[in-house]
Structure formats: structure tokens, C-alpha cells
Image 1 (cartoon, rainbow over the protein chains, first blue to last red):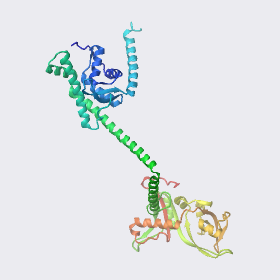
Image 2 (spheres, rainbow over the protein chains, first blue to last red; image 1 turned 60 degrees about the vertical axis):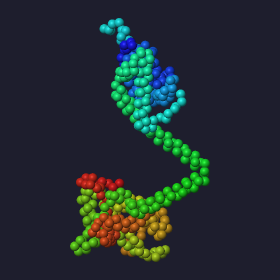
Image 3 (cartoon, rainbow over the protein chains, first blue to last red; image 1 turned 90 degrees about the vertical axis):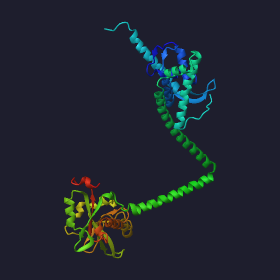
Image 4 (spheres, rainbow over the protein chains, first blue to last red; image 1 turned 90 degrees about the horizontal axis):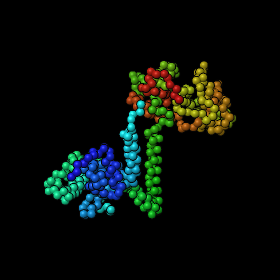
Length: 114
Length: 321
């Protein structure tokens, strides 16, 4: 098993979950697997942290939760992005991009202005 | 994906669902680890638990959030139910208009009757005095407990001025004195005995009396060197009966034999002063034990005063208006 390399920055988990769920309804484990696959296991997430995050987003109305069956015919709780969640995703994405831009400006500056 | 289970409505159910959700996760991980990494069941369980982190802490955290969701859902349920029931009621009423009509009329009559009775009670029992600020009105009288036990008398004019000038806890003080005026006959009217009230100018503001014609008394009218009033204010009833509601009555004089009084105004009709005063007397009788048995505030002279209550004691005299 490869060693995960990057610790998750606080508050980023929500954005990752929102983005992942934008592909369609998933249960918690599927969300994790998706993140693992797309990051090639480079991201360290304590898996339990996913559930308070999912429930909190459900409470905020970003996610709708429903019980359904997996392809292996097991009962699981599926989360789906709500309209509000979609809006939230859009605004978080633009905030993230801005943040990355600003941090990037500082980190790529060649020398301090005198 | 169709919804196969109801949303949790109770804490217990929410608990069960949370456990099922977390169990599903761990179980899925364990199977995956056994399958892909060929771990034994025990090793896979340990690894899944390690990856999950502090199970109890995460469970507790999610549990707290679920409580919030549950509470809000319950509130929404109540609102939804109300909406649904209201719609249902409205539809039912529309569907059977005659029943609705009878129901509404029944309710309206019932409410109307209750309101009417309350209004009556309110006027007669609860709020018997037709004066402004009745809660601040007090009655000043004289008691002679040794010689005339149980009887209450009014105060002398001198006392009235004494109180008026010296009192600091009264906003204003008014004086009234009932008597009978004998009006001699003229060509059109026979002689008659008319109830009259001698009042101080301050009583009008105190009892909210307004003129419908002419003016009210002023303090200047109170100064009568010979002690007899020189001006008179007619009641609405007397003005109509004796003067045929003549709008030019102001300035005319009523001859009282050896003297005459000038008519300066006509009071607006506002119920009977006498009745109201009698009620006021009765009210005081209730509150003053010594005068409880027989109270005659209407005989002799009495004064009503406006109390500012404890707040203004020691302060300056306030204008009652």
C-alpha cells in the first residue's frame, strides 16, 4: 500500500466531497474511493472524518440523503448534491481558485520589492 | 434512485441509521482489503479501523448534527401538516357552501354576543368612570370619626384653596358643589328648579369636559367678590329644552330674580355628570372602609384631585393636560 503524502488542508474536505458528488449520487465509501482514485492515493484522509462532514452538509441543505441499494444489493445511504449544494460548489470553486492564485503570486515572486 | 426507506423521524431511528451507515463503510473496506490485499479477516478489520480513525468521536460528532437535522425536520413537519390541514379545511368549506355559511354565521353570532356582553360589563363594571386618567383620580373629603362616625363630608372652599396652593403630590385639584337653581318663569317657560353644580375652572380639564358652544370657565370667573357665580355653562339637555338649541344663546343672561348670570357656553354631551359622580362616590365608598356604610359625597362640598402617584410626589405641579 502506498504511503499517503499530503495532509488535507482544513475545510478542503467539503469542497472535495461537493465536487465528487457533482458526478452523481454516491454513498460515503464511494466518495472516498473516488477521491483515492483521482488523487492516486496521495491524499491522507481519516475516513471517519467523512461522515460528520457529510451529515453537516446534509444539515446545511447542500446534500440530500436517501437510502438505496448498491450494485451488490446492499443497503447504503446515498448522498446527492442539491441545488443549494451546486451553488455552494460553484462559489467554493471560485474561492479556491482565487486563493490558489494569490498564494501562487507570493510563492512565485522572484524577489522582494525594495 | 428511488427512495426505499422513510427519513428517520425519531432519535432511535437516526441512531440506527448512523450505525448502519458506518457499519456499511467499515464492512466495505474490510471486504476490499481482503480481496485486493489478501489480508486475513482480522488484519483487514484492524486496517479498516486504523484508516477510519477515532470511531466513537466521529460517530458522536455525526450524531450531534443528526439531532439538529431531526429537530428541523420535525418543525418542518408541523408546518407542513398545518399547511395541509388548512388547505384541506378550506377545500371542505368551499365544497359545502351552505354548511360553511351556517358555521360562519354561528361563529359570528357567538363572537358578537360575547363581545357585546363583555363591552357592557366593561362599561358598567370594569371601567365605570367616563373620565380620562381615572386611575389617577382621588377623592378628598372630610371625616368626623368621633362625632359623625361613618359619614363623609366635603371640604370647605378655604381648604380647597389650601390644597390647591400647598399640595405637591397632586397635579391639579377641582372643586364641585351640587345644588338646585331656581329659575323664575318668563313668558314662554314656567319657573323651574334646575340641578346645578358649582365647579372650579380646573374641573373641566380634569373630567375631560368640552364646550360645544362658547367657552368654559376660566380662573378669572372664579373670582366673585360677592360669592355668587356670574357666569353659567348650560348642559346640552337644558340648552335644547329651555332654549330650543339656539346657537345664539351665548351672551344671553338668565335672570335669577335679584341677580342674573351670563351664559358663556354649552357643554358637549358626555353622559351625566351626576351619574358619573355618584359612581365615583360609590367607588370611593368601596375603597374607604370608614365611608363604606353610607357615603354621600354628592351632598355638601367635595373635591376631586388628580394624583400623580408616588412618582411625582415632591415634584412640581403638573398641568393635567
